[in-house]
Image 1 (spheres, rainbow over the protein chains, first blue to last red):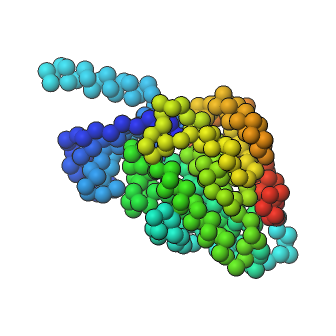
Image 2: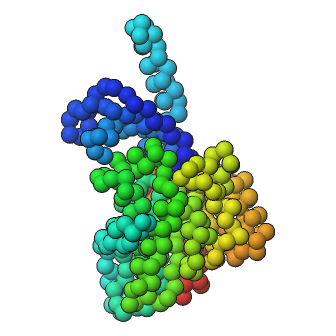
Image 3: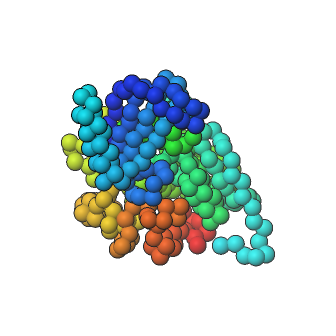
Length: 83
Length: 256
């Protein structure tokens, strides 16, 4: 909330959280304070299902370089798969 | 500071205050034991939410003689682990300023109603809570001192204003109703050193009582000892001294 750089999108898929697998409903993307990574700011991904509850969350906190590498590899994999 | 032959005790627990829209809002309340009188402090939590560091800081304030209350500003978003709730708030663009200000007013009223109050109440916050402290100290009357610890977005460009945060706190400067202390790292990006300069110029322009302490080689989260890349030991030690000296002068508390 110090940066207010946040995006949100509906998604379809599955994620595995502390309670096991659940259906994903949304992804939150932000560049703001992480909870665990020891940096002032990080590229944060939260795969959630708001209809299940706050605990339905798979969280990933990435350095900017790592986030770019991930985004590029995702796009590359989809391109190779023809999707 | 306690002497070795003083009685010393503290109570820290969850209480309920009346916040925005008359809602019952849970708050962490840490206070010294004894008859007082004690000054009060509203401690506004940061973006990561109503978390361990925030409650630890409330107990530190209580050790120094301040009855300190920290409302859970994220309560309406849901219940669960603080980071799960904080993640949702982060994605939703934060909490509406009007709601925060009303919750802070409720916390102030709670403190003023205590039998051991000395009649003085301050507020402080870190990160987004620092911004909230500036905002509430400007929009509410009744605070005797405010502390902004590296609050981002006190200065906000018009394009970055939102429905929830429609006015930049700096634009309320003329209404700031109590002395303000600020602690900032000169390498911080939120707020930048230039934004702190801008805020300071506005405070000067309106003849406000303020003091800013700014540290080279430090960024955001100077006091966060649980985050080694952010924590700056020398600045943190000095910054906490500045906080307690300031509050001691303005709230009639025990100071250091």
